[in-house]
Length: 170
Ligand code: S3P
Image: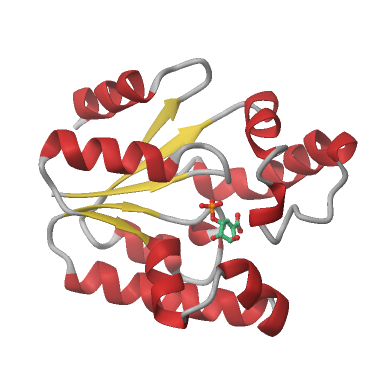
């Protein structure tokens, strides 16, 4: 079984991924962590030195490698992963079940406000402007996110509840 979690930054892809992997007894793979291991620096530092385009190329390359090599896994992606190049097509054609962890702008802004510095795309956005930025960004990205096989609302749900919901949908 291959399960891929997609969704905006702060939607809980890594936390839910680990919880699901635990519950289903499957290997867990975090795309961002895998990329960081490969490059030996944080994604933030990589963005700063080489820019977003180089990051997207690398992200695609690592995603392809993981998807082709791993038969069984829970894969947590980065927020932008399904929105670039042929990444989404690759996910869909790999027999994976793709779940979109859907959160409201309010939930995302509340979660991201204290973690902005770890995320290059929102690092320079002022706290006041964060909800507006997320809203616009989601508007662009929803086109991809909403093509997932299943959409799971995560607002006000615990990790255990979201994990349970995904398991029930398998
Ligand atoms: C990104 C999300 C990040 C990371 C990179 C770009 C995005 O992952 O891949 O900073 O484009 O939304 P998380 O969603 O795990 O924060």
